[in-house]
Image (cartoon, rainbow, N blue to C red; front, side, top):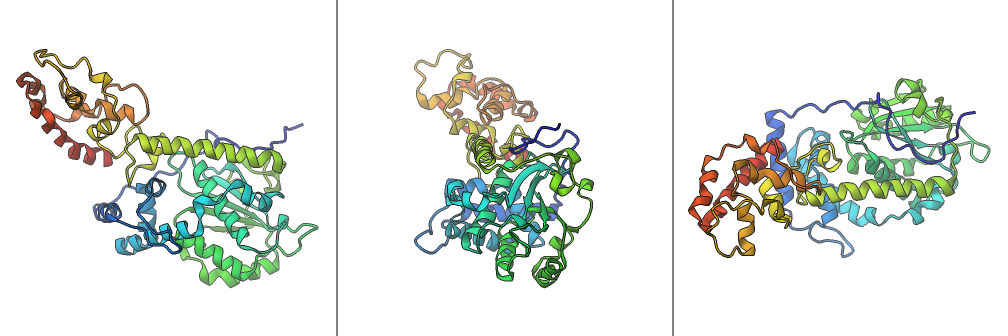
Length: 405
């Protein structure tokens, strides 16, 4: 007898591989660069109810390179419109209280398992199941908050190089609920949130057991659905075409035996999400808390983020690896201000050593990328025994360009 699973799956199957993103064209890169500089220049996020103010660290963490690119793609590369929409989403996140939504507040909505995060599709996307037949509450703002809360958890669980999700909806009726179609007003509110504040996040929507009343419902809301989103909707197809059978719930015609037990599943999901979120945040902090950070770096897929090695080394006071550097011993009493200079005293490659490793909280080791930067003047500089060695720090812009690219 197969073991019945009661907690979320930790990872995709080995055969599930994300599709690589296309490289940016020169024009797209230019538009991204413009948008990044605009976002960095923001002094305040406008909001009501006294929530206006400068960007918080959590908001900077949210503003990754891929986040900006998602808005650019959603606006067909209109950079000014993308800037407007990003700022609008930041305002919405503050006023809606996205970061303040707690598992305890949302818990009653999920007691019957009407939303479940379970498994991954064939492209490594997290599978987010919606089961309208398990509806256990009346229409209320908390129902919409429930969806937002679960979307945030899905994003936290996304594997490296994955930025979209698979939505699986089963409109099968139950004894307690025969009409599984949501109200038009609620549906429009949800669509507005998804399209305006989670653009380019839907990879595919797989919908089964669509009764005539729900079919009519979809016809009513179709005018409000973005054409690109419409193409991602698949009705009454064999879901095993898109999700490995072993990670597809039996209720959706897969072979994964899963039983929803709220007391077991809910805390397990929260624990997994907290661990993922904290790991990503700590990597972002170690990389210099950069706006426009690479999601590949935050998820651990890339070894280097967008910050230059010198900048990362300066932001993290750990000069111990460079201690053996001063070969021309005459310098009498090194001060704390001189310590960063000692990191530049060895051969040119040493200038880049701290960054690659410190971003991962590991012991620094020579970074292969840095060796590619020819700086012949740096090797001779220590012999002059001058404190003007600060000048080599101008290497940073060059290295920023290389790591960003």
